[in-house]
Length: 223
Image (tube, rainbow, N blue to C red; front, side, top):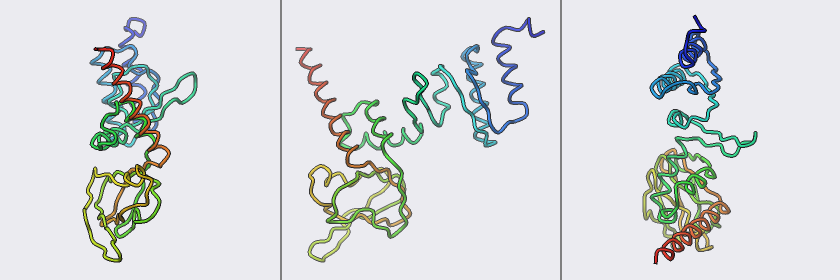
């Protein structure tokens, strides 16, 4: 009888009842709240499976940090307002790319995440010019997929000086120096890039400096 079931047992029955008809939209309010670690994991793996294999949309409201690894998107609410909205896998990918850039290598994970949330996806077809030599620097780029050539034009003599692949970054020199672009970037295949606008790039640089200052204070306090 229901009255003789424990809280966890009732929770599992409620989950089973909700999923038995394989709904396309699942609204789950604290689905793991009354469950032990193993049962909670089973429920989240089942929800993940429905999303992956049957195209279900799953919206979970929770305070349980154990489920974060199952999420594609995290929306953090504070006092009824959206404080952050993160596409998890995309943000992780961007952070891994940023860590390989000397400009951002001193950043903390939180700072990298903030930068990643400001980056947008842009697409180019093979043969498109992504940036042009002589133009003003307005964006920083990371090549997400595809390939591109770096072409330098010296008094009409154009030559390929480098080829870019996934994970390579470009466009930072003009932003750092304030001078025009010193080369042209041409897509040699269909390309996706992550782009960061000039204002956000400068804010990231200031954050790097702030982080360095914090470290210096820590070192000073240890003397």
